[in-house]
Length: 619
Ligand code: AGP
Image (cartoon, rainbow, N blue to C red):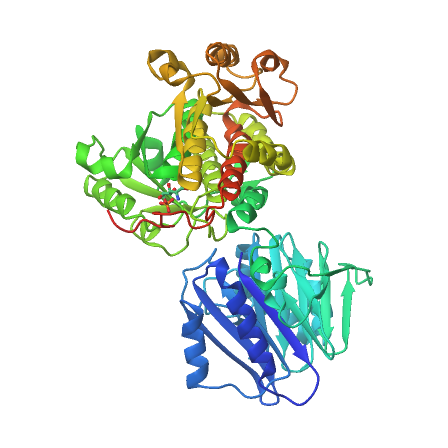
């Protein structure tokens, strides 16, 4: 989810390329990032600057040492995936001869193999990034082919994974070449100048005329031309469009709020979290999970520590990991963990789940766990944050920057990462056969498309939210993995719409909470698959009847084809058929949309709800 900008213009070398690129990076600032850099093609050759930290660090470096007037430029804000956020790891990455610069968004899955080949060939590396591998490959291809477009085409055929690449070369001063696969890249069309960007926000103040590039296409821009070819070098026609968003909307991808944008990014967040972690035949490779296999085999208890939404992801993980690995899993609110004198030791694996990696409650719990001798594995979204730095190992979620305070895509990515952890442990400890793991991974690979289908059905949920905008209390019921989903649905509604909302284990209802149910009380019920755990489905259907009999308005989330719920449901919201343990990835989505839309209907600030912070860095 890095920010990418490219520019090329006619006329004498000037300060415009740098100005356009820096302004574009500023517009992409919402993406959040940990470093930034630019490269410029000038008559004096290639010049570049890159700094860790915010864009102002780069701006100050450029003010201290202004680059020469240029004819072309590329710029990048980095959301680290491989390599800590440092000056050296920041983009652009430069070829050994200092004539080529490359910036990259995405993950090159086979970079280790390619890097070994380059090292064997005598290439020296400065950074820990996957991107630098592509930079050296591109430079060698340019030296061989003498053309940047052809070099890009040759290199992208060697790369596996997801990427947007932009490159410039000192010997082609009025050219920028880009390529994309499973990662966005759009072209901005100007008069005597052209632009590239990871989204239209990069150039919207200069042009609203744009081209959307397709999969595995390579684009070459000069001041007066834009040429697009496919991987075979065949010219292709691309779709032109006019950007009708204002600048503010552009940074939200045309959505009204970041939360809406991030709800829609969930299929990609799950897909990116899965990317590069499984091989054909279902073998898991969590190579960044650096805890000794002997230690992992000796683990006799797992304790998840987290807060808020992250804790609910931990609750979903509990059901899956216990079922697959037969290891007891406790889920503890981080702020409670160290005050209860937890029984943890060197045989306990503590899993700290956090989007920001800066939640002080969780940081303090991590420190306490390590003092007790436990190994700590961080499941975190923000590279280089405190929690992974203070843990023994990390399994990053690749949800990209999450701007809205209310967590959505990070939640689904956390659940996905925990599924991978559970399957990895089952593989390592021999609790499951490889073919059993392979079947679950095959189902996980289908989840992005299933999530997309729920997101595509959002209109029904939006209308329901508008019809309920004056509601003052909502209950949420679920069983098994539906229980943490009920809790998360209630939390979303509380933090966004500022109304009373409560999630319950459906079986708990008759032990007291059912007294809350009155005529018209809206009750969401998350119904498990009828093909899943025996009796679970039937029991939840009877819970629907219990509340309906007392006058509740039943809002039921159920699988496609589940007819059993219809006689007792005032509203049925359908989700695709999904294996029981994976269902939270789809059943929570309508609840996110509902809370988001109800808050919008009430005119509230969806992205920055009152009293809340995106990262709670105090205890
Ligand atoms: C979720 O929507 C809230 N923003 C909050 O509960 C959040 O999940 C919690 O504060 C934990 O944050 P973290 O994941 O960054 O540690």
